[in-house]
Length: 436
Image (tube, rainbow, N blue to C red; front, side, top):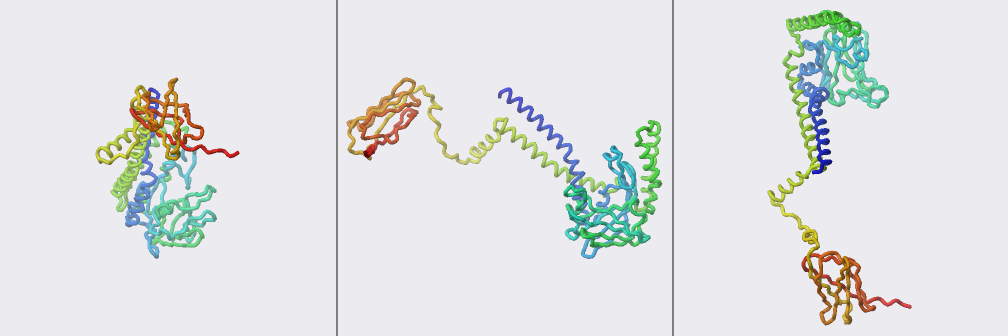
C-alpha cells in the first residue's frame, strides 16, 4: 500500500471513529432527555398509571393522592398532583434571565402538575393564525385567569401555533403555578377557535395550601438564598454559609416528606426508579442500533474506497465457493495479456467469394507492424487461402491488390494477431460502376 493511501486511511479512521465515540457518549443521553420520556408517559397514561406520568416531570416531591381527577364525556380526563418543582434553566441563569414568576435556575415553586390525557384526535389546537387555544382557570373567588397552553412556533412568526406534546404523543402537560393563580376551582380548555371543548371542576378549590406544601417550609427564603449565591460579588465565606443553609433546608424537606403520610421525595419513589430505568433502557435501544449501523457504514465505505475490497471478496467466496452458485460465462482474456507478444502465430486469411463466383484473379493483402510486413498471396489454385507464421501483435496499414472491378467489404483496419492459430475471412463483392 502506498504511503499516501496509508495516511489517508489513518486520517479517515481517526476522524470517523472520533465522531462515532461522540455518538456513543451523547446519543443515549439525548434520547433519554428528549424522546423516550414522552413515550413512557404516553404508555403510562394509557394504562392510567398517573404516578409514573407525574414523576417523569421530575418534581422535587409530590403527594400521591391527586388534587384533581376528572373524567371527560367520551373518554379521557384531566389529573393534577400537588408538587414542588425546581427551575432548571442554566442558560437563562447565565444570561440573567428569569422564568415566569421571577424565578431563576435552582429556585423552587409550588404548583399543580399533571396531564390532560385520552383526548387524541379530539382537541383541535393547531393553527398558524389567531390561535385561541388556552386554559381558562376560575379561582375560588370567581375570577377567571387565562393560561397559555401553546408552546411551539411552527413558522417562526413569533406566535405559538400548537402544543408539542399533544401533536407528538396525544397528551397535554399541565402546570399551574402559585404565581399564575392564587387558587383554582374549575378549568375550561378552549380549542384554536376559542370554543370550550373540555371542562373540569375540583371538589375543593386548589389553594396551594396543604400538609404537602407545608413540608417545604419557607420556599421564598430558600429562593433568596439561591439568588444571593448567584451574585457576582459574594465572598467565599458568605457563599459557604448560604450553601450550608440550603443543605439544611434540603435535609429538612426530605425528612418532612418522609414523615408526612401520602407525600414522597420523587427521587426516592419506586415509580421514579422504575420509570428512569425504562427511559434509559429505551434510550439505549434507540441509540445502539444507530451506533452499530454508523460503525458498519464507515467500515464499508473505507473498504470500498481505501481498503482491499474484502467485503466483495467475502461475498464472492460465500456465493461461489460455499453456495456453489455457478458463475456467468466470461469472455476469455486476450491472449496477449497472458502470453505477451513474444511468440508466433499461424495466421490464415480466406476470401469469401459467395457474391462473385465468377472471380478468378489473384489477390495480395499486406499488413505492417514495427517495420515488418505480413504479405498474404491468395490464389485460385490454393482455394484463395493463405497461411503465414508471424509474430503476435497488432498489424496496421492494410493494403489489398485486387482487380479494380472487385472490392473487400470487411477488410480489418487492424489485424490483431493473437493465440497460436487464428483465421480471418474477407468477403469480396462486385464494385458498383458509377454512371456517366
